[in-house]
Length: 102
Image 1 (cartoon, rainbow, N blue to C red):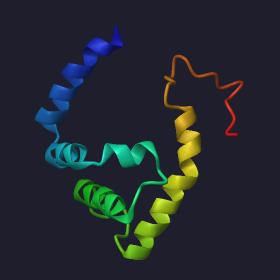
Image 2: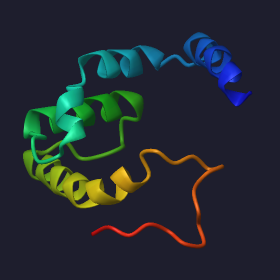
Image 3: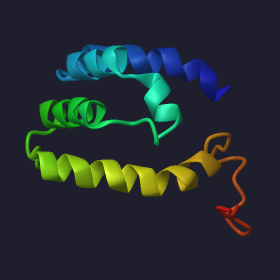
Image 4: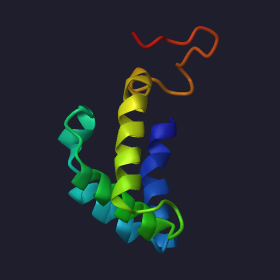
């Protein structure tokens, strides 16, 4: 029944969080296809992410081209591990016998 709380939580977030506009803007403009296959992810999409993060929290991350390239590489390294979690929830994941990246 937790799914019923999602719309209410979203309404509270948009009502109470002053920075909700930058989240909405990022999610609307995000290139979802690139994030499905991180090999296709490019530096302009990373720049969009960094802009969002800096709007959300100004001291989050350096925005230099070198920092953006390092972030892109870190995302590509982490992607196989994140894909293992795609269909999992805290209720379904088996922490005792985790899945392995092949």
